[in-house]
Length: 380
Image (cartoon, rainbow, N blue to C red; front, top):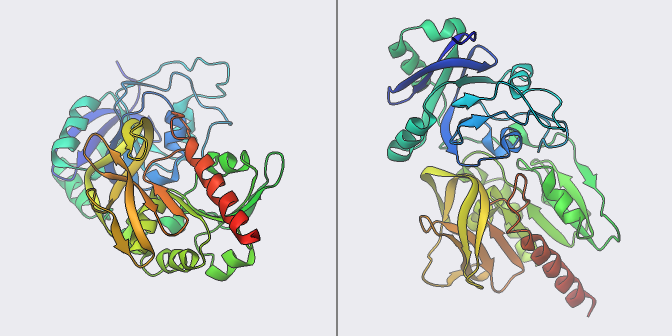
């Protein structure tokens, strides 16, 4: 018999799932999405791309390795709510410092456990990602019809401008590991801490800039490369903010690398549209093909929007020719872009390998090579 207060997950279309409170007790709202990673729950929780999303874990057993202070990918947990089937009763790992339940309570994250996450996942795959609410304690005893109305009154993800919530308030620098070879201007649109570290490993001094930074702020650094991170929200909201900056950087032929949200912004800078996926790609086991090599990578994803670019031909853009470089083998979604006439490329997934896998680490090498080649051209 559970000692936790009762809880209920209420989906926008009226379907409900009853279980037990997990983490903080109260109520929360967000977009219901599922993630298929069997490990790395701490990195998932602290990924800013999950801001305002209620995350359903498809792996049934969560919390068995506890929580530590080394693995967070940002300064806090960003998920709006957390849905698990079978929370571990104990945390057993030599690095564990506290339980996941304690961490969720400390950070005020309302969750639910003891629900059929497989049924929830199937429902979201069939009906699409949708708004939801998690209610626990006293809030769970309200009439479900009234709770559905509360969910329907909550904000939608389409049109959501969330970057300002997650970006750093102050810029900071991540120094190179070893010799200083490059200077990178990196926009924090919801950056994970492992990302600048990956560039630092390749000799880059990374200036992480808030999303409010101007083109002048970027050019003042005289950067060898320009990076755009992952992040939450609808890429259409960047039309007046980030997109003009990226176009100005492309005009100056500064090498550009974008991941996830950054891929969508680069796509918009080239003139492509974006659209919302039915239920998105989330997890650390998504198969993507590099079309240049034919190699299939198992990759980490967290995106609900995608770039609308043709797979069957090279596109003519204001910056020359651009091709789709990577494609998802599950559904043919565009997973990467490569410019053929300016030094720019991007991928829709997370190559920093936190929480894994490591198949896509070569993309940081590709960025370093692009910067080295560009510097050489400049010197000659």
